Length: 337
Ligand code: SF4
Image (cartoon, rainbow, N blue to C red; front, side, top):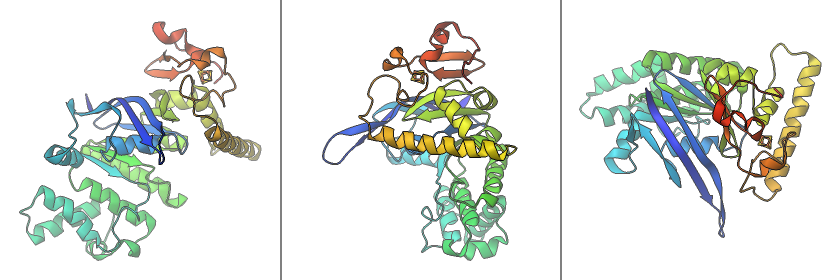
């Protein structure tokens, strides 16, 4: 059974001087305990807005968030209880840790909220245990440090330990390794994976990296301009991408065994995708129809209308007119992959 369920989440941003835009549109998903669900998309696709809204840092314009089947608290004690059970990990560990305070202070606060009667010795023991659980040793020395005395990877481990301090059931990890050196990204992702298994956590892993999404997640959702355009089992989505946007992402993703020519081709595709996205942002906002149609090589007349969600079989679905015939009957073909 799902521990976290998001139904029809919609988030609008107001702009200074009037007007605004829809950052997230009718987004729905669910995560079970012990599962990693990846949310993939380019920067500006709305991924972080989803995380911040589910984490109750932003107020949605519509939709609901359920924890164990019950609506998430919006204020007061209900909100505090929700935040204890659903914790966020941000991409910049330095910005998320107050440089004035020691690591011990950062970890002791959430523990004390949960156990206000803890003695100093018991608090220290819990802090050290948390640090050891994220492989930060010697724990006593690390606990006395301030964030600027640690490396980027160590700071992110502290941020993860802090998220664990309140005993959460759900972790929302927003690009947790994108600001770290390549050499330690895998270590941090392996750490999150281990903690998820040991503590039976539900993990929402937000990333723009298809390769790690496939490796660390059982399911993948692909987001484009505020909409989930494709979702399904990780291998299905990566190996047989159905939506033209996912196909573009998959073609642009570096393959470790790729030849020099294909890496150059992938670089060209990524540059083109960035140029296209920038050009598109300058276009009048599309308020109807497929949001990808200005970039889509398969765009047709029907794409001016809102695309249906087609069921491709095995829990794999895509929101695209190319599969309109599968919307009701189901099926498994994915042309153009
Ligand atoms: Fe392309 Fe149309 Fe599918 Fe959108 S709905 S991705 S424009 S084919």
